[in-house]
Amino acid sequence: MPHDRNGKELNPGDRVFGKLYNTKGPVAGTLVHINPSAETCNVRVAFVDLQKAEEVYDSAIVMKVHAGKGEVTYPGFLQVKQDYGEAGQLEKVEAIE
View (cartoon, one colour):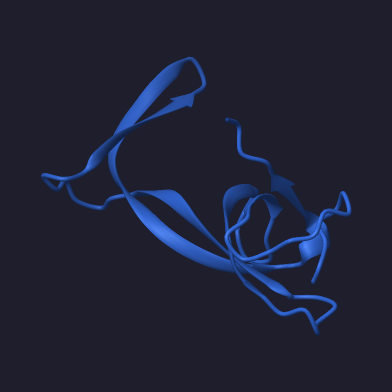
């Protein structure tokens, strides 16, 4: 099985944090697939992203973004996404009990 950047073995269902291939910035998510025979592009991570909505819906979430000295508010929604990455670029996050 592939290991994270700290040498911990990764398994499907593990919580991870790090940079993925096609997603801007680091993400926190759940490891949903591992390809142990691959050196790169060997994991897939599912995560929730907050997206700006073009229209206002009854179920929209109001997002507040701090811009300069003020605050901008606009409607948004949660979207479940998946992206590929490399196990060695992720960090396994241990559950706090």
